[in-house]
Length: 100
Image (tube, rainbow, N blue to C red; front, side, top):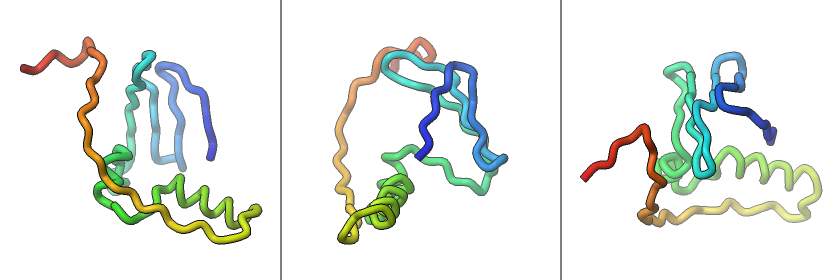
């Protein structure tokens, strides 16, 4: 995994076709803008997990491959995720008016 530091207004380019830009950040959230070809699916993690409940995420797959390649003595079993829905209060955001 590659971890990068980016500031507001800065972006990264993935494979020459996808741009991820930091639009706004605060203590509690980061707002990203993602420009990708129409054929590329872009989902939030929790949505992707609902659509693929028995699949490993790309990061989990990469971690599993690393463990198998660099020292895990036994294969790592896929981890299946149960979906738990909870209400999480969001910090007030000046860009979004309150709804009744």
